[in-house]
Structure formats: C-alpha cells, structure tokens
Amino acid sequence: GEQPEENLDVSLLARAIGDYLAGLAPRAREAFVRRYFFAETAAKIGKRYGLTENNVTVILSRVRKKLRLHLQKEGFIGE
Image (cartoon, rainbow, N blue to C red; front, side, top):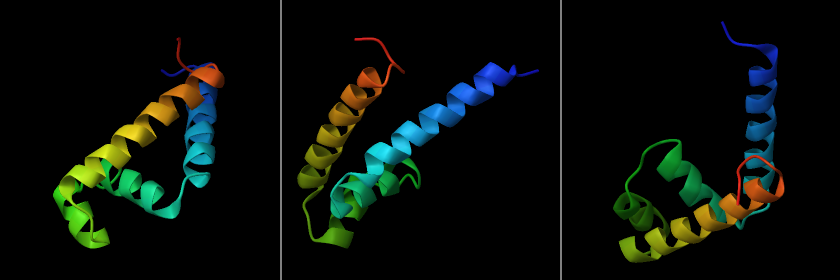
C-alpha cells in the first residue's frame, strides 16, 4: 500500500500547485484548468475567451514554464 509520506508529498504538491494557480491572472488560470483538468482543446478555450488557438497555446506554455520554476523553488522538482 501507499506510505503516509507519499500521501503527504502529494498533498503538499497539490497545495503548491493550488497556491501557484491562485496567483495567476484569471484568464490564464481558467485556461490552464480547462486544458489540464477538463481536457478542453486550445481551440475550444480560445473560442470561449475570444482568443486564437495560438494565443491560448502561448498562455499555457508560459503558465507551465512558471509553474515548473515555482515547483523547483518549492523543492518538488530538480533544476
């Protein structure tokens, strides 16, 4: 079975991701959640917010890059 330490790490990681997302601009946060939690396409997200598919992919790329840096800073992933 799972060890308690593994559960704690997942909980801490989830909190770190949640804290990061809470600090984003609303449109970037909503695009990220819709793409990676609800599996919406970039085209569908773009249509919802009046953006091109390319605009959405750029927003998502920037959000992922900053999330990676945030998780590195918090010690969840290596450099």
